[in-house]
Length: 256
Image (cartoon, rainbow, N blue to C red; front, side, top):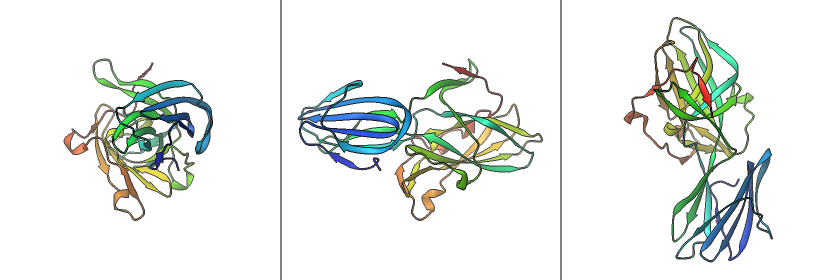
């Protein structure tokens, strides 16, 4: 597993990393870090190895006053909400609840360790497209993702570099609810790890009707279970927000 490990470089050492569709070359030389990365058409198994050549793709460089030769890759949830559009729409009957699981790609946070501790760069596992959630006067910019609705843990086909987000939806309205899209509020979710698989907190949504917003609750399920390690806390506390999720269905997305 590439995440959450210290990589200490010798002077002029080059390492190659691959995770899912992301691959990169990293070179350390005295007081300088160089990063070269690109995205692949198909996913690869996790790789971390020393190589003789620094290949140049998209290139970035950081320089420092004092030597600092250790880095770490940490998993992070996307820095914007993820609007999941489902291939197979699901209908929730009035008064009924469903449990489903959404698979969200992670971001890699390249962190400098040692004399200086800071984040050099956050990079998604594979490139996201952007979409606008809501209308022109009231909305927000999100990442767009397409997914299937998964209702059982046994049906999850886990990929390295992703996180499983459990979701509970209760339809408290008097009509069937057509679940076509779902906004994954990444800012409120923590990351946990068990057996090299990443999980998030559970989103609990109370759907109250077509023209009404839905109260959102975050359940810290895995933080209380044995074997789950907290890797990254949530960026924001939902208790300090209004705890409201914008309408889930019939939202027009403007692709950018």
